[in-house]
Length: 568
Image (cartoon, rainbow, N blue to C red; front, side, top):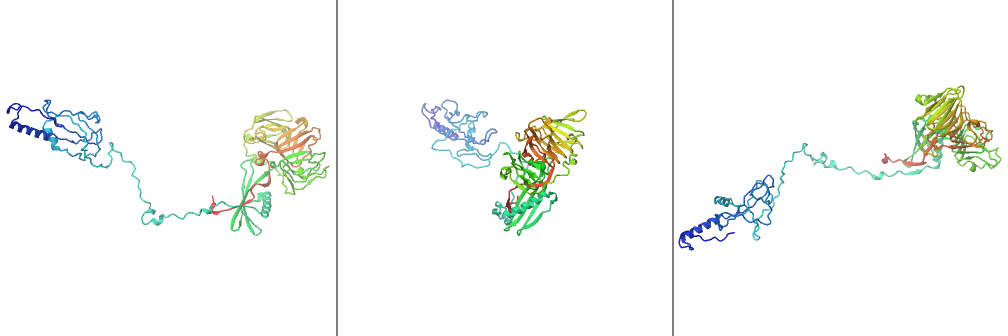
């Protein structure tokens, strides 16, 4: 703003009065000063440390009331203005709206001519910015929208930019090819129907299964076909051999037919029977031996008739199914034998015979077993098993000598030479087959280290196989009272109890399986209890003989519809 100036004596006229010349000079000076009073809006380039912007400054001329030669005084700082930024010296920069470099930053009332005039007048001072008057707001340019400027250049990527060219099938002129195919009929992916097998069909299939099970060696890979009551059936039989010497062979059977324009199938699994699959198996029953005070827990089979007697309120108990190729004879019984009280698991007579093999143990197969797991004995030998997983042996004739050998987790085979008798007892911790071409004598309790009835994970197995007899030794060997045998036993000619007429009153308990060509009496020395080891339903001791029979172990007895759309 302008202040009033003091009058000075210019030497013209009286003091305190202004002459014409002085008046003209004063008017000229005032005009010159008025021409120099301008507001300058210099243009600044953005510094290297700030963004592009506009700095506004005003030069204010004040009359020389204080005798400083008319120089411009420093303007009072505005209270709301920010502090000057460090590093800019006396030039105070105030940041305003950002603009792009190269664009003129001139605002109204800013002229280069006025700035030049002020520079020529020699006026010195500090650049300041005063806030605009409320009634005269500073004009503003509309905001400019431009691409942002970055302080550093972004490097170009090594790979070329992605191309978004349309696929050929979507280009103009080929739109018909891009039309999707019709959706599949999801109704065709329905669940197949399940239907029960009719009674007539079931009987027909049972007869065929019996035929196939007894003649498994004649089964070929060629599909079988036949007709029943005007309907055509076909069957495919696939043999699945056992994985090792303890496994069982299987045959998978698939039977198919058509009915009402739809295809139906049923599947079953047949498993080969070992002689250890029976709790008790007898090829020929001795007519002088009566089944009297006996208890058999498991399936029982005889290729001949069996003799059952009841006396003094005592009678046998069969907890499993009983099958015989002949019939049951009770003529020697003192009392009437009630079928439902004796054969608790059912009775079936006149079934097909199961032949004993000519050679029980396939020695040729054992020949492929590593030598460290095959132990041969040339003379009569007593073998004692130990709970630590080892066995010791000593000859029964001549000078006594023996060794101790540790069993491994793999199966071991203890074989007697021709004419040799092996005597066994002890606690078995492992998988063992004991074979003698003559006799095997049980000289005391023969037990598993882990009783399967107490330890479900037990993997102890013992097989006793003899071409002649498997015998329970005299009382002097076994001691008085009960005798327990954990093993699957197969005696080709006979299983017998020596000195069975002696009075003992104990129980002969066989846990596993007992198969033989024939049986001797056990009473009065022992009453007999045979308990089937359920592990033998799907496994067998190493190299234990198998039968020529298969039986169905899995079959739901229903037809399942085959749907073409449900493959996989």
